[in-house]
Length: 449
Image (cartoon, rainbow, N blue to C red):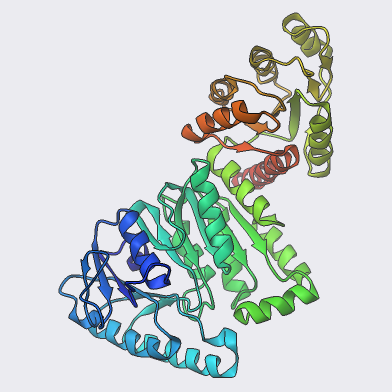
């Protein structure tokens, strides 16, 4: 896998001079992401593309090349793979579609591709995929452009899920490490990538979107090995009969019975998500926040309605919205105004201030019977980012939820992003992310006993 993620040089086969075409956009993104190795456009009809000298074939490249990004019509891909073998290129990402996903003729073409790649000693990601990213190597061989390096690695059979996670992680200051869009996965699959990420120090959390797996036993062994040391969050497409039919049309994947996958995921210690948002939320929380020691949660809010929504979600998700002790209530009453509702949720009401959140967090996080705090800010609250950062340093998770705060909220979210502290825009999403953290912590503790 090293050649995919740490290449000395990259060839873009099918590099185009025409903006908007994939061969142009991918080449531009490799350049704009700051890749420092050799970049070699391949186009027999052009002398240069985007200021780089063009070559008629990968065999004509003078420098060392480990990775080829292939964006040519399907009927030409086999020949390109043969030339990669002649050049000594060990890794290829085939963006091109027109293979198994289009029917019998494409399936035959893909079978020929697999044989050619094996004979040429070239490992293949794809075909029919959106590319790969390796942010530590400053490589964005996909679209759209992402540049921020972070702790989340992504393996996805959907190019759009792949792209969404990379964009969201960049927008919120979290970043990604490696991203792979599998496409038809004619060769390299999620299992091999999991085996690689198990020993990759730059990967702290793995996000998976899968529709089916080739070898269930090997997949579970690999996933279970990773999950012993780092979280693996999985979103499974094709859960229903109609969804499974759609998966078959998408990448010709057999989705399988969902209850079988669900049981297997639990046995392997995987954390299951049920939407793209959940997949991202769980990953960013697990990557960036301390794990809770137990299920006991306190909710602080300036919005009664949001506090109720968070309470329902916590209770439904295995967390305990604990009653506050009389001693804790007395300490809170010493610091907070009398109009506050001194229960759990602790409702600071519409007159909440940043100082009130600071005082409440100081008291609650010091309680032995509190494992985590869900802090919901439903109003403009200048300075709340500094308060969240201050209390996170104490070691217990503080899940920050912000909504309804207008421009002041945007500024506080920006400050948290700069500190790489996750924030959620919905109390339900924040509570579900905290519950996922607890499930992983519980599993991890059991494994260590």
